[in-house]
Image (tube, rainbow, N blue to C red; front, side, top):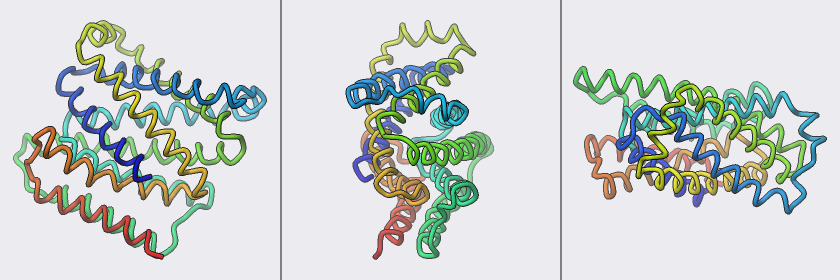
Length: 283
């Protein structure tokens, strides 16, 4: 999960850079990213016996549901970087944790222990700290849009991750990667057709190389996330652990993107996220 978080942090920085250079093509960017992801998945799953159609037939509705939820999650999460800098957007993405915990508890009985819940509360305190910053009206409006997108992404993420965990419990990993990632790619491609003309802008743009790199980073991070889900057998803990990427993003965004506004508050919030993770890891 630590390596996965470092890759996720890198993806966040790339997303911020891409958003600055090409506007309005969020559906298309995510479609390209998922194209790289499914190619990665095919390379892994086919040689390992991943093509077993019986699992697809038995779980078709769940594959479709998870694919759509993941597609919407990634599009909303990516668009947040249009309104917020990388550090703040990533700190807000820990709302995914709350959604995953609540939905997993309700639907597949994977709630947190009291100690882990305290750690999750500390993580949420970090979000509150960021949102308590006094802003000018223009900034406040942008932050509210970013927050709304983050909440939407969190809800879709909670349902997507919980469904993913259920599927992983009922089939081999290569099968899930082939069909699960396949439906995520399909959902992303369908959504990208909403604004067809944006494809031309993206393909002709020099930023396409960065998008392809982002896809490679995201696919590797996604694969590690799934491995962590399988080994931990608890979606809530994994969802909370994913919040540690916030401190990586804040540090890297400071050095690489020069995003230093409200840096003290961002560091404080990132430390709260890290503290929350530490509480949950104490034996």
